[in-house]
Image 1: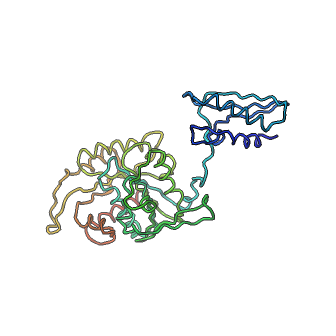
Image 2: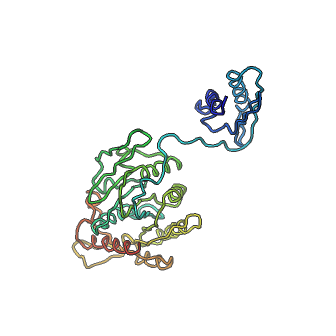
Image 3: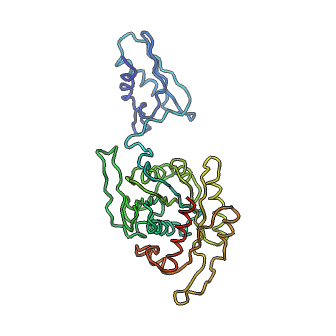
Length: 353
């Protein structure tokens, strides 16, 4: 008999407390050894005691006795270590779909509510207006607002591929940009109650299982904060660098420092391409020459100087930007002063690259 045959037999041994998965599927079979007239199987158990340990040992022995020739000596050993993880089923994530993407930029923020997604959408449109081939992956799993901001909530996402293991998402194309969001592949209004590993997998799927094609720039609208999901995403995606979005007030700037430290951590080590200060001042439509610094003045500029990173631009707080986001018409499509702010940031970013 061969080791493969023995492993096939052991598929019969199921762990009752693990949704009846086999010891093989759970990665518990650490080693199979054969000598003349003898078979030894080593099972791996975690440090935490398994109350079914003796049951599983007996079940493995019984399984081998059923299949092996009479007189074969059977031995089941155990070791204490984390069982080897079995190979994941379904599509295997790799970087193939990013092969024709020249630059990948994470749009990040230390906290929510600073307008990161608004900046991402308008920056993408502005880059497209400058002649770049642009894609956007909306990886903000807990607040996927890009479908609303681009007027693509009702878009039907198509798939291509021969089977379920090779299917790829086809991104939505609008305003000269390719878009794909968690919001495109989940039901409208659905609460995405995902723990860290599940959310990380979903985000990798949005980025790595999409037929992006040739792109000059892929922007990734990252979840706010500096937790496990963000670090996992940065570790698995070959980012060129990051752009950090903030507002001028002190409470937001404190989170910018944490975000910058995450990217500069030696284990991450991704360059910060610049900082965008959003909601820098309020200008009434009736008085375009007036500026009211509702959240403080030049806080982002001072932070960028202190961190020794470029200030890519300052975006005013104007009603037209909010209305454009709600209506699915990004401000960067137009030629107003606030639109020019996004075009200026796009030029600065392209120069930094």
